Image 1 (cartoon, rainbow, N blue to C red):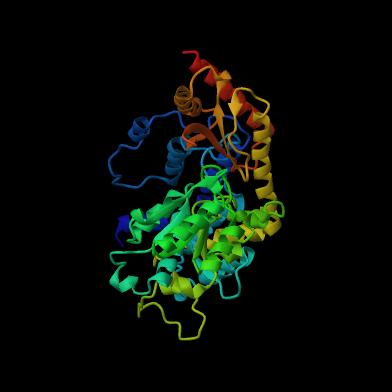
Image 2 (cartoon, one colour):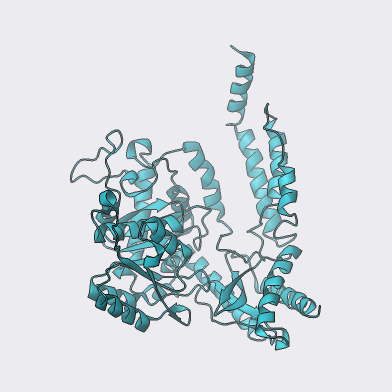
Length: 485
């Protein structure tokens, strides 16, 4: 045998050994231990060009010992990555992931099942179906409900609206949407993925009708007036999109009132619950989703408030046939289920053919912590946001424009209000950038009511009141310094 091939085959066998696995496990466990205590920086101090220099190298011609690869990962990847386990990482809607789900990722990769068809993933497709059924039951959908895992909330929203388009325009798959497509109605704080879906569905973003908000929630009276106007103008409505957990403020639209309006008018209601649907686990917060059972479709991201590693998202439909109709194609070499038989193939209700079984890690996490555990985590993260809101209420140098409905809170540094609003906008933007660069914490920013605000998302159950106070104090000191320049 070729000596080079012999050596390569030996490397392949070694890399499947317990010894090799321990190397990666030690690296991950060391990252967990190093970050969750709150020492060190939250993010890298290096600029993009500096990071790029580290990886600007020729394509490796020969392999290296695994020990050298692990050392490079520790030095150049782990050390300079965002440390989401750090208790003062309070930026984006990306979780500090659950350990059980992290370790399950290795098994998912090792099994390497493709979940489009049952014969390629006999256990994975069953597990995915069961997890989807559990989630449908939590949403209040009946026995005919179903769904599938997706690549993220954006695809989940797209798939839900694709099902709505199929119901409204059954010939759109073959004939297109025509010159006068229907409109999609959504709130002004809907995620940008809704507009992206409308554009990609061929409807055109000019066919989005936006409803104003009241206290950062869709104004139901304004929605009713909008629907009345559209009906008077003989404009067809393909779907109404409500949001459960907006990106900016974590607010929940009134799903019961919106659902009743849609029911009365025979309209498809899609709920973007990517962030907030996990409130279904919470005895304290699930009432924010009252009326969800009226939706025809919904998006839900376990990789947000269920703290599952990226990615884990689902689209759920009240009638699984609606989703299957949206993907009505035949592939004779794949999909073999007969008429009247339960089709375990996920490819008949999903975009992807080559698709990993992200349901494995969700299933493992549910087995490990149970629904009760996820409810406790959800309540704790929301309570942490409330603690921050109460803390800011004691400070004259900050103003919070809304109370937290979940784990997201926006606030504004006002520093004694010695400058005008436009100057405060610029100051808050600079404050966020400078604070994050310092490394002691990590926050984001957005615009509410035309004004620049700071924004935090509490995605780490290790964040304490002391961490919150340290972030607020750090922002206040830095804000005063910037304002004095």
